[in-house]
Image (cartoon, rainbow, N blue to C red):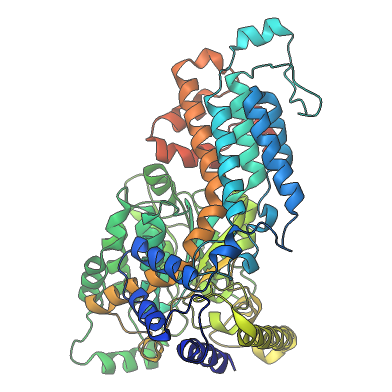
Length: 587
C-alpha cells in the first residue's frame, strides 16, 4: 500500500499539468520542464529560485502573504511582535529580557506544524518569517545594549529582578553577568536541535549529502547521533576541524574498497565458509582497520574538545538483559570512537560483536570493560535515540536522516514532502495516507506485543530481546524526517561497498531530498543559534575583564575561551558552569 500511494501521487503530479490549468495560464509543458530542471539543480540557490517561480505559477504567493491561518492565533502573534518592537524603541532591556523568557518556546505559532510547510514549494507564511526575524533582532538588541558593572549594581541596591513590561522597569540596565545568565537560561529552556543519522548499511552514504546540504546553509546541528552506518558519517564529521573533508566521496570509496578487499576473487567462498564456521559473513578486523584509518585513535572527549561537536553513537547489547547504550563524551569519554563505530556497525550475522576500546596511559588500545562485554548494531534497538539525547543534552527538536530499510515501515506524516498539497485529489491522497499510517501503527503495536509476550522470540539465537522489540517498537522518525528516494538496486546491494561514482550519486540525491526541508529547519533553529552566538560573545566580553563576572568559574573560562568562537558556541550551551546561577538551576 505504501508503494501504491507513492506511485499514485507521482503519477498525479506528472499528469496534473495536462488536465488542469494553472491560475496564470502557464502551459503544462512549461511546468513539467521546470520540475525536471529542479531535479537537476546542483545548488540550493538554483533550486530555491525555481520553487519560487512555481509558487508564482500556482498563485501560492497570495497564501504566503495572507496572515490568516487556523494553525496559530494571529492576534496574539501580532501583539507579541508589537511588544518586542515597543520595548526596543524605549530601550527597556530588562522588560525585553522578561518578555522573551516568558514567551520564547519551541514551536510557537505553528513553526513546527507540518501543515504550514506543505502548502507551498518554498517557505511558509510571511508573518512567521517576520516573527522569527523580530525575535532575533530582540536577542541582538539585548546583546548590544549597554550594561553596568557589578560595582554599580552593588551600590544601586543589590539584587536585580526581571520586571514585566506591563509594570515597567524604570530603565534599569542589567549587568554583564545578568546578560550571561539570561542567554544561558533562555537557551536551556528553549532546547537544542540534534541531527540523527540512521543505520542502513551501504545506504548510509546518503547521510553525507544530507549533512552537506545542512552545512552549506549554516544549520548543521552541533549534536550529532549516528547508528550503524550513520555512526561512520557522524564520526568523520565530529572528528575533523574542517567539516568539508567529510563530504569527499573519494575518501569513503578509497578507504572502504581498499580495506574491505571488494571484488577480490574467492570473496563469496570465504564468506560462506566464515558463516558456516563463525556465524558471520564478513571479517570484523578488516572493518576495524578501515575505521581506524578514517577516524584515527581519538576518544569521544578528544573529539568534543577538538571540534566542539557532540558525537553520539548507539550500540546494542548482545546478552538477553543487556540494554542498549548511547556513547558520547559524557557517558563514555575515554572510549575510542572507532571502536564505538565498529560495535555499532556489527550487524548480527554479518559482522561479529565487538568490544569497546579505550586508550591506556601508555597510548595503547585496551578493552574499556574488563569483563570483555560485546556489543552489536545499535540501530536494531535505538536507531534514533531521542529519549536519551533529551535526558543528556536537553534536545527537543530532532532532524532525522532516515535510510534504514526498517524506517519506511514506521515513518508516517513527519516525512518531508517532495511537492506541496493542492486540490481535491491531493486531499484524497493525504486522507488515504493518514488511514494507511493509522493501520500501519496498529499492526506494529500488535507485532510488538507478540514479540514481548512470545517466549520463542526471546530465545532467538542471533537477536536479543531488546533487538527484537526495538525493530518494531522504536520510532524511526523525528520532528523533521529526510528520506532520500531509494532505488530497488540499493536494497539488493545493501551489503556491498559502493564505488566512488555511486557515492557521488547518492550524495547528490540526498542533497536534493534535503532542499525542501532547509527553510523549515532554518526557522526552527534560528532562535537557538542566535542565543548560542549571543552567549558566546557575552562570555568573550567577560573574559576580557573577569572582575565584571565574578559568578563564572575559572575552569569554565579556560574551557570556553580557549577555542574559536564557533566551537565556544557549543560549549557555552552544553557544558554546565557550576559557579553560575544558570548552572545551579540545571543541577
